[in-house]
Amino acid sequence: MKPLSFITALLATVAPVCTAAGTDIVPPALQNFPGNGMRLNGESVTLTPTAEFIDMQKNLTTKLQQLSLEKKLEFLKNYSSTTLISYTTDFWPDPADYEKYKAEWKKIAVTPVQKVQVGIYNRGNNEWSLHGIAVNTFANKVTPLTICSLVYRADSNVWISANGELTPTEITTTSDNVYGARKGTAWVLKKEDALSRISETLTITRRTNGEYLYLTYDFSERTPGDGTMLAQGSYVLRFRIGPPAPDPESQAPQAEPATPQAPAPETIKAEQPREKAKSSDEPRRKKRRNRRRRRN
Image 1 (cartoon, rainbow, N blue to C red):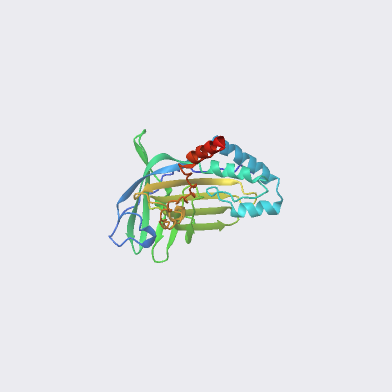
Image 2 (cartoon, rainbow, N blue to C red):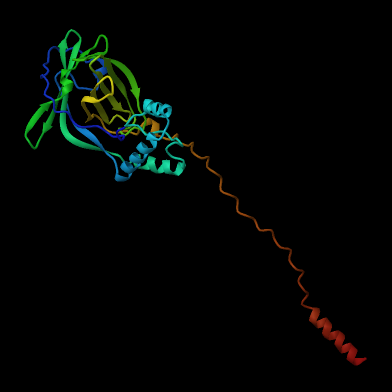
């Protein structure tokens, strides 16, 4: 089994240029994009883990190979390369090691790769398309992205690709996701025949703090038998669309203001009983007694 990894290479496949038509209202699924024909400036991004995290991932892969088939399948069923793995003693007998893993996970950086521009275009008849280009500033050239070949049907909320229909599923991520807490929609196609198994996914999500819009595209084609990879490509696009605000899930409930305490009363020192003052006549009396004794 291949090591767990992050696949975020930018595709440079040339696709037909999308054209604009009409001025219909933007459908809800595309509401984070500007109006018809206008583009968002953004960037393709990749994930950059620390060297320590890479070593930890290799160690996890070794431990995964040692699990029973049943546990392997259960793990892979719930696994996502962009979401923190939940604690399990199969991987971390010592909970302290999991805390170290979690700390390195939080250090994974989202690194810009290339400038991109993406816009939405009304094709008429309730159909919309995306026009995305990657901008290579060094080579002074642009390359259309594969998402340009997708067509959105607003009346049924599905995307149509050359492989078929991508159907929607609402998704929500937490801060344990490398791209942060987000909400949005994933449109997914799963297709298998005698020749291949195809998986195609387009997601549009927005950070819950309002700062970034994410568009991701993932495609893979494998042989139906042993699953040999025939074709593969994916990219993650990020667009800054608003000033950041605190993520709702990261805001700890504010403690109620403490009731002001009245200053403690000063301690009143109890007056110590005064010793009875000795009469100043006492020495004189003693002298008188002594004189009388001498006379006698």
